[in-house]
Image (cartoon, rainbow, N blue to C red):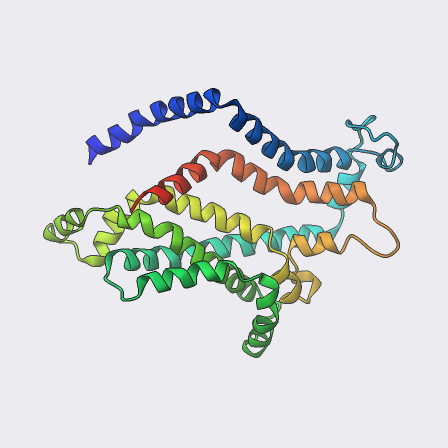
Length: 294
């Protein structure tokens, strides 16, 4: 076990260096990657810049690339909005709950699908992938009708279950290769030492699959944080609506205060950006290993 760990640790920098060399030798790939990165970063940059602009500077021609002079009045204004603060709290509870529920359901299910000979496993995996292609708006009405009968409308439980219904199939699909890569001899050796199937799963399979668990936890959290459709359809009470729905409510037929809206959007996006920056290495490595194992 320890020798394998050392090999993985010492091999990572070499693979990173070789990857950099490949990119350097192919300038076209580097330019394309740079353009795609800019395509995603420019809207974020413009959102942040606009949030610091004064109202008369937003529609200036030509537009200013920097907020001159900058102002924090939009942030003061939106932070005084009780609905936004409540929406942020709701979003945090829903995202954390969705992440916990998705991992609790997906990790054991992925382990079972990997270690047990399940008939028609390819069909099951295809169904999991097909579920990801269903737009959330197509599920909103059936879920509302079902949840209204169960008393789950305008509740954290209803929103968490709705978000987890999309997070669990993706988590199973990505987690299963981690458990497939675990040799049968390791599990059998653990059982010989006194472990049963459940304790072998806890003591052997879970520690090895930590990168995949971190990856799926991050993806589930980010997906639930930015979810809009379920928050709009299953939370009719303003006090239960997530931040994404509150942001949509800041636009009206009488006009939009764009600097306030961009300031609120920046505040809502900050947690996701921070999580991605700090866990980017784990997410990328987790997705890569999950795609190549098994």
